[in-house]
Length: 361
Image 1 (cartoon, rainbow, N blue to C red):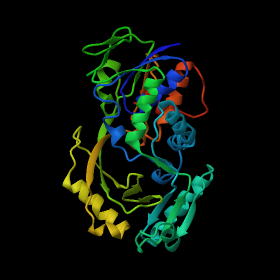
Image 2 (cartoon, one colour):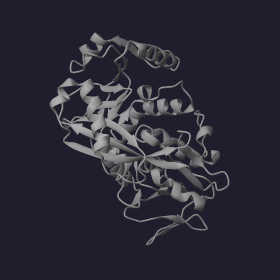
Image 3 (tube, rainbow, N blue to C red):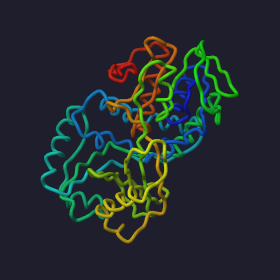
Image 4 (spheres, one colour):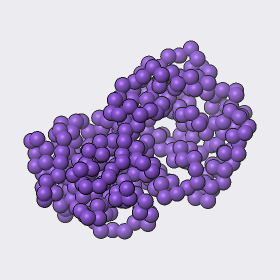
C-alpha cells in the first residue's frame, strides 16, 4: 500500500484517486477550491473522439479510443460506488457538412477510422434529416458514428467525488495553494501531508509548478464559452466544423464551444456567444427565434503540442503528472486513472505513452 496525495480535485484528480483507492492505496486529494469547480464542471461532457479528431490517428487518438471503450463499464462502476445516478447517453453522433467539396473529408475520416475498428457511415442529407428532422435542409451529407456518447459532466463529477469519499479517500477542499516540501510532502497554509507519491493534476494551473519541478510546463488556459437553449431535443450529438450541439435529459440543448485566449478570465463575452448563436441557428432553424437561457465558460488546459502530460518524472519518480488534457478531460478520465495507477503499481500497459511523458518539453 502506498500513500498518495493528489493535488487537484477536477475530473482527472478524482478519477485517479478513485482508481488508486480501489486498488488498496491510501489517498488524499488536496483541492485549492471546490472539487470539480473549474473546467470539469463546465464541460459539455462529450465522449466523441471520432468526430473531434480530424487528422490521421496517432498515439493521442489511440488513448482517446481506449478511454471511450472503457467508459461503459467505468461509468457504471462510479454510479454503483457513489450510489448516485447521472446521465450517460450512448446517442451516437452526426458530423454534418454544408458543401459537396467537404464530402472528401468525410470519406477520408471514415477510411482511416475503419482501420481501427470504428463503425461509421456516410449519409446523404436526406438520410441525416431522417435521423434528425430538426436539422437544416442545407446539410448535404453527414458521417454517422453510432459508438460516440455523452455524459452530464456536473453530475458525473459529483458522483466521482462521492465515490471517492465512499471508498475512503480523504478529500481536503479549500486548501489554497499547494507546494512540495523537501521529502515530497504536500504543503498548504494549514496542512502538511506526507506521501510516497504525489500526483499533480491541476489542469490549466499546472504551469505554476514549473519552478518547483525544475522544467518547462507549457500548459496554458484556453477559455471555452458555451450556451444552452430550452430545446428542441436532438437524438444525436451534432458536429460541424464550427462546433457541436448536444441535448441533455434536463431539456437543455447545449451549443459549444467558442474558444479564445483570455488568461484565467472565465467571463462570458458577447462576441463569443454570438458566434455560437449564429452557427447553431444555421444548423437548427427552429433556434432562429430562440435566445440562450444560460451561458458559461471554463478554462481548458492546452499544451504546446496538443498532448496531455501523463507519467512519473524521471529525475523525481515519486512525482507523477496528469494534466494538459485540453478539451478531453472528461473523455480521458478513466484511461488516465488506470495509467497512473499502473505506474504506481509497477504494471505495464499496452498503450504507447512515450509522447505524453512530462519531460518532453
